[in-house]
Structures are given as structure tokens and as C-alpha cells.
Image 1 (cartoon, rainbow, N blue to C red):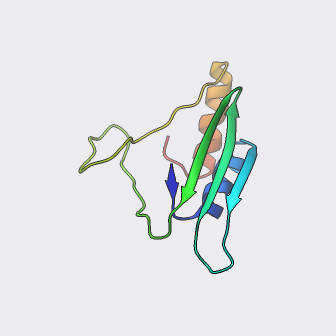
Image 2: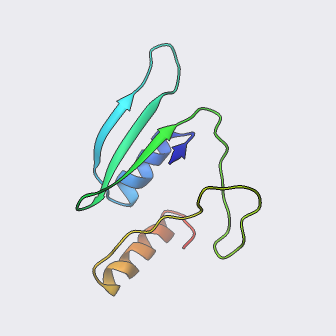
Length: 99
């Protein structure tokens, strides 16, 4: 996946979602933004982000058709119980995320 703000992305996936960062690559003393971060999302499962300076933010309200060309518009994660699902929903709402 692509981000234009690696710090914000790390805060969300590490602090809100609770996914451990398992690797981080890049950073350039010349100011070029060439970073790549990996998070463990479950057993044998990861999500990775490239930071691209100038990448446009993309937001599409849930349930609406996408306008223009996109690769995908959502990701999903597995939870064991309905209680865990409700807990995750509350955590996301508290963080200001659309659920």
C-alpha cells in the first residue's frame, strides 16, 4: 500500500490497531522519502506500506461506488469473536475513523 505520511501510518497501525512493526527500511539523509514499513497483522500475515512523497490522499465513503480508477478501496482483518469485533469498532471510532 502507499502512504504520503509514514509517521501517521505507523501511529495508526501500531498504536490504534495494535499491529507490531516487524521491519522498517529506508530513510535518506538527502531528504528523499523512500521508506517501507511492515506490520504483522496475524499469524503468517503482514501489511506493508511504501511512502511516496506527493501521493494523493484517497477517501471514499463506505458503501459508495468509487469514482475514477483505483486498485482497491478497503482491507479486512480477522477477529475471533463478536466481542473483539465490537472492541475494534469502538477503538476505531475513538480514533476518529469511519466504521
